[in-house]
Length: 241
Image (cartoon, rainbow, N blue to C red; front, side, top):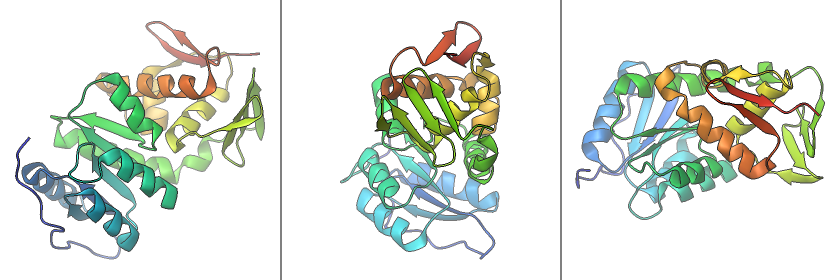
């Protein structure tokens, strides 16, 4: 990664109708490339290069989505994401140069909705930003008919968007909750990875199905084993009880 740093912010490119994207990236080359590509897609883009600046910009501008680097000077991306979600939930696409599964699960655990590993294509980044925004708009459509669903020790309150395991509330991210609700629409039915990717994330590129796998693993860590069943080579199902 280049050692060049982005100045605190880059000039605004806003109109009132544009969706606001906050890009938090300390590599100037990557930051400018992301900014220009998103701006070309019609987004109002602000770029900051460190964690403290990101939190200040977030509080000031209230972005619709955040593209957040995992490794930042000062506060790292995990802590920035945690504080953002505590202040006001927002869709977060995390960028990481780390490929270890543990790092990815930690990122998802603090509230990131999706992640991309560097190097990445700008085309895919734009697709994922659009998908995150579509998910927010259609979140209510993912609710199932029954207001409360039970699967073993797990209780899903679809109206309040809360999940309980043996009576204790599990802290699920927005994406984890939406994924669980999608599986809960038809307990026992196997959902293909590509279908889940399309339904929850809004795109269905086969190469991106690892995103689904990572979120399922995060769900299992929070809900315990025996709730989501793997059908090898196909996908996942909520265990019918």
